[in-house]
Amino acid sequence: KSTFDVNDNLFGGDGTSVSLVLEEFDYFDKQSSIASIATTLNGKAHLADLTNPTNYDSWYDGYSAYAAANCYGSCIGTSDMTVKANFYTNLHTYLSTAGAQYNSSVVWSGPQSIKTSKISMKYDPKINDEADLQVEAMTELRAEVAKLDFSAYPYTFEYLTWETFIIIEKEMIQNVSLCMAAVFVITLVLIAHPLTAFLVFFCVGCAIMEILGAMYFWGLVIDNVSVINLTLAVGLAVDYSAHVGHCFMLKDGNNRSERVIASLADIGAAVLNGAISTFLAVVVLSGSDSYVFRVLFKQFFLTCLFGVMNGMVFLPVLLNWFGPRAYAGKQGGHGSGEKEMVKVDDMDV
Image 1 (cartoon, helix red, strand yellow):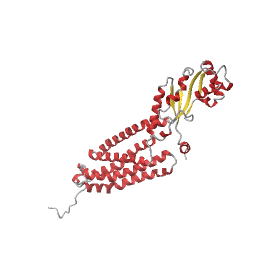
Image 2: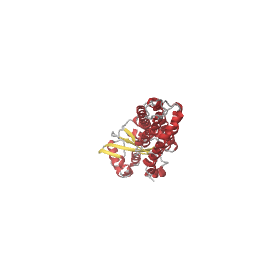
Image 3: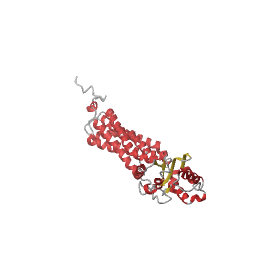
Image 4: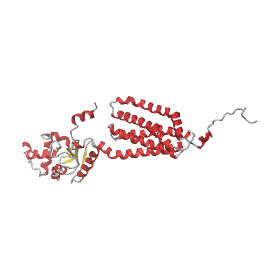
């Protein structure tokens, strides 16, 4: 199992940890604001109950309790936190003794100046695996922190993934749309008939929609890996439809049904073999432990399946209903290179 799988199994019920990073300012002057962080943020931005010590861990709260207990007899000067010199001097002592667990949470820039510090919080577990709620939690917490009267920002490693959720849908639609536009232009140039090019374009679009639907039921999410594969799927799916559409335009006759049958008899085996060979090329990835390779196999399998179904089943039906006449050079056998054999005896001399 991967590290992430083990982590989900053991700690999947916990909320995501997030750090509130306090930047450089006079911490002595902002003590009341720092002390009220939990009260200010509690119940907002999908944070867990911040009155619970397991969900909110602040070095300042620990230091306040330490000073209230007269530094356990180790105060330098007095424990009066309203005196600036006492505040910083005793904080140094606290971080090296009773509050040693917070030593890495406070970074000093001088004896009486703090460069940065962090306070640990947790999100509500209900947002786990819910992309919309995670994005909402991230953006709302940033907005709430921006209202504080000191410089700070929230951060968690998970934001790297959550930031992707914000743009991935837009990027997917944009990239797939650009690929589909390129497919239509290229097929229009190569097939040289707008109706047939549109029918090929339509079948490719149907294949992409079917892949997206199957991804939902197969448990595949929209992320950077699946979007890349979906973009590649456009290029693969067009292959199965374009050959059939082009072959149809080469078949002469006024009976669309006969032309469709002739087209499939001519090019169908080659198209099917192409799909099978593509599937065989990725089937070895089906047993991989890598998330990237498993997703690649699943999406390529869906691409081969739905690409062939639309190219060899759906497109022939559309061509049978709406297909245009063959190229002018193929109508009536003109330009086909075929000559009628006539007996010499039958010719008038």
